[in-house]
Amino acid sequence: MEWFGKDVVGIAALRSDNEMHVLILVDGIREISITARTEIWRKFYEALRTSHLFSSYVEEFGTAPRIVGILLSPEEVDYHIPWVVHLLLQGTVLLDPKGILKKAREVLKGVKTFQHRNGAVVVMGDLSKGEVVDL
Image: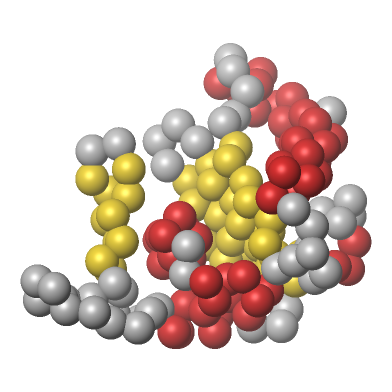
């Protein structure tokens, strides 16, 4: 994580059978487009590929790990993107010095997520047909 420096203010991860999902919160990234963030993530992943840990994984399992990542600003966590909600509720917080991810998890109390076929389902609450709610 030294690549991002002190701008990283949170990391959470969720491991499934065949891949790892990683959320990295970076101060000041809000103004950067999603396309540019994808390029930043790709550079991070390429740097990771040269690490001893990555090589050890490939040696042990015979294939590179599938890692899916997203870079968000701390403010964007509050948008409740379903993928992020699922990761926060089912995953593990690895770094949270400012308590941003802890607070986000507390806000999501009562929200349920579960795996369904090839994806995750996020249940934001019990709704009646046609009911409108603010999220």
